[in-house]
Amino acid sequence: MAFTDQWYETLRDLFKNQRLPLAFVDLDAFDANTDLAASLAQKADKRLRIGTKSLRCLPLMERVLVHASARFRGFLTFTAEETAFLANRGHDDFILAYPTVQPGDLAILAQLTKQGKQVSVMVDSNQHLDILNETGRQYGTILNACLEIDMAYRPLGSDVLHLGLRRSPIRTPEQAIGLVKYAKTLSNVRVDSVMGYEGHIAGTNDDVPHQVMMNVVYRTLKKASVKELTKRRAAVIGSMKEAGVDLRLVNGGGSGSLVSTLQDGSITEATIGSGLYASGLFHHFKEVKYQPSAFFVLQVVRIPKEGMVTCAGGGYIASGAIEKCKLPLPAMPVGLKYVDLEGAGEVQTPLVLPQGCPKLDLGDPVFFQHAKAGELCERFNKLILVQGGKIVDIAKTYRGEGFAFL
Image (cartoon, rainbow, N blue to C red; front, side):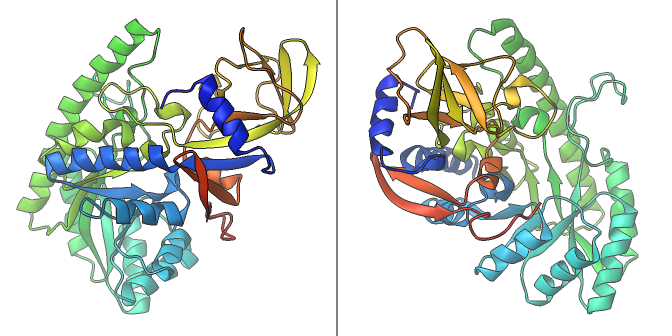
């Protein structure tokens, strides 16, 4: 659904008696995003895994699993403690997306494994394998490891130009086989899965309005990168299978790369998270169109001059490189602009009103989207759930459950 002043007026009436600030999710849009992802997976005959860091709300993750149970399975988690939290709520099938070497985390992974939970933790070095092996020996179990391969694009053939995330150093079949062979010398750890996350494709907008030339550049780079990484990922997986590695899954992708990832014959599943909320940085992809579903709402508390209002709070800046795009997106009323010298502030956020803006009085709501997805939930204990233009339920976030996992 496009942002409109008519929608603003509907939501203003809906939240008239609610305490602000608040966060809400439009379930109609959320379900539509789930259906879109599931239909792409069905067409490719692949599965989807929930990227939990991008949702951080168990009731909504469970809604996805129920709503599209034929295509969604399991979780890509971001900490060991979070994995245990989900396991204690009756869930299974986990990939812990980031390596950990803390003794407490390793104990959690060992205990979950001994309980019969399917959990694999990310590795990209012999040292990671050594630590997992020693933990498995101490706890009398065999820990599962997921080997991460680097999907970044290096068009010059070296590290001089590296387009992508700095994650795993493993890029080639030879490097992957070296790690697998080393794992086979260890008694209490085994490599049972592979992940390759093409973050530079999954998170880069390439259909931004009024940026025709930049869109062409980004699409060209994406196309070249997809061609290279697809070939390289297939070579890595093929070499591992030839080496006798029995892989239970090969995971790839992200919300913005869902189409190209699912078309890769070497993967068995893709991960989606941010696309379900369709936060501020996930609006403008050429191949996939998500509907914005997650918002936060601030109250107008000052009118410092004609054509301007000031909201209470709002400094919910997204992580990553410091750029203006990491500011929350003022969504409605349509056309609101930040004051350059203040931006989104910890205790106040002034905004310049556009021509023809609906009249804003003290106490009126202003609607924003966080630039990223799950980070919104670190600011709120609950998400108000809206469906059919009505408030239908409330869902606790991880924070509302009493947890801050990272």
